[in-house]
Length: 192
Ligand code: ZN
Image 1 (cartoon, protein in one colour):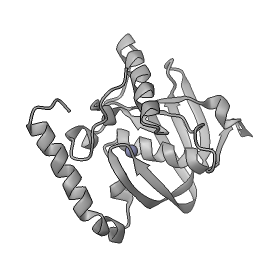
Image 2 (cartoon, rainbow, N blue to C red):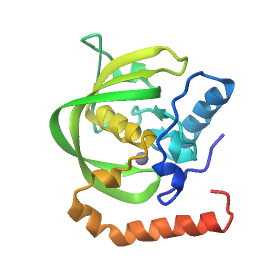
Image 3 (cartoon, helix red, strand yellow):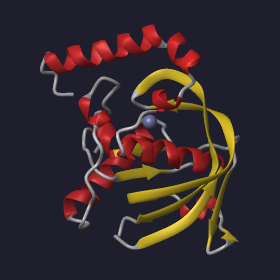
Image 4 (cartoon, rainbow, N blue to C red):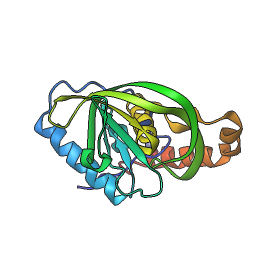
């Protein structure tokens, strides 16, 4: 089922997600709905906050992007990225490392806003998978960036928080207008 994606100004986007202690049927169903929603929006990652749920849960799939490579390593050996997709991360914890790299980012909660964001090149991920099994791996390239973006979301952090001040200033009017539209639609009882 495709869920409405909440936009900037919705309070859920600023909530740190609660840990998921048990993979209940409700969580499985939410994961399936989040994938439906992400694919319908042509996104590569979606956090629970973006469908209005403050949980430590995100889904990703970078297979649709051909022009920006990703890397993945498990137990010290490279793994085919496509084989690890789609990816569900529950209660994710990151340790980022490597050089800082700038790259373009967008966000499904900020339609038509794109900006260069600087992040560490690589990230070690510790999480539970969709079955509640502990997983650990190292991701780089686009996947490393997408995971950092999504894990920020589950902690209530948004990519505008990572923008250089000059970029954020240049976008101020657009951001204020988006926030205002979201607040008006919430006040109007539209259900989003
Ligand atoms: Zn996002």
